[in-house]
Length: 168
Image 1 (tube, rainbow, N blue to C red):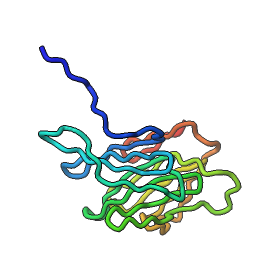
Image 2: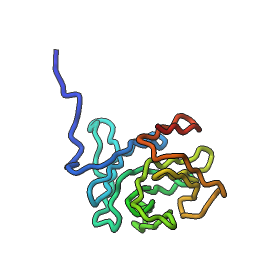
Image 3: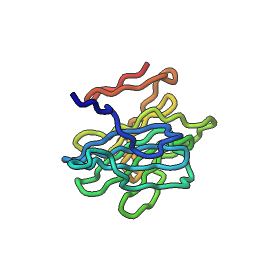
Image 4: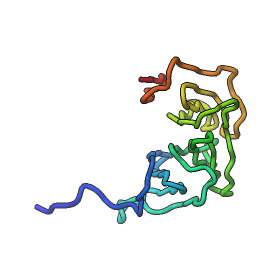
């Protein structure tokens, strides 16, 4: 009987603050937020059976605290990430970095909780939850709903099941 490791090293992920695995069609991506970098890995099937380096963006002006990946209109990949200043998007084709939401009138640092890519939006509409608030925006930073979510206190955790958000 042959014994194998149940894990494989992905790369030098020392200093990782958050990660997300995103599946698009038959490709799995691993998005990792490091101290001042976002790295994207793509799953390589047989004969490799491991995540391999795909793209990396370093020396970011805003340090990532949470990360996600969306596919706009089934063609354009964008990394989304939250920082102490707000939420940002990195276009994987051009490498351009845009601020998609910076809270107005905020005296404290932003504590991003989650980035929800809304269903049936072609990867273009988001719910961004931070501190004790949430806002609906497009991946280009335009408000998509005039609704501004607010709850009584800052949650310690946020979970999502289908179209429901849970805060505790």
